[in-house]
Length: 203
Image (cartoon, rainbow, N blue to C red):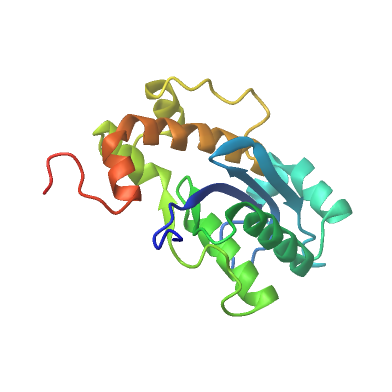
């Protein structure tokens, strides 16, 4: 008999955009890592609209990402179709869960991409997601306000080499290491919650 509540597949996502406000800014890069197999990745660039608004931070910090998106980026609909096809090829009938680090921009950007380009009910991640930052607060017992670099030290994860940050796939790989380390730290509590079972000490 088929499992009526199959365990989800987790996909760690990072995006780059022309700025932080997606009312006026646009996605220019998507990087995704399958948490269950860190070698299985998705990466694409999206062509920003002609004359679109670009923040000074993007122009100064990741001009190479912006230039590559302008030169080789896909149209948004093609990017959405390719991402959905890749996710579904891994999940089959299992739920797909989006994971990210401080996911406000990432979650909104991906959800709006699917909604706008493919239509309602075409988002393989639906509306549920996992944010690594509050997950770390709970697993590590630390208050809000720590940096990603501090978290990596606590989790004994090597930092990204200089110049590799703020490139979507590099960041997604780093976040996948963080996510998997936190899941391992949570141990039986995570396993129980993933299966919908009582956790340690619960009845």
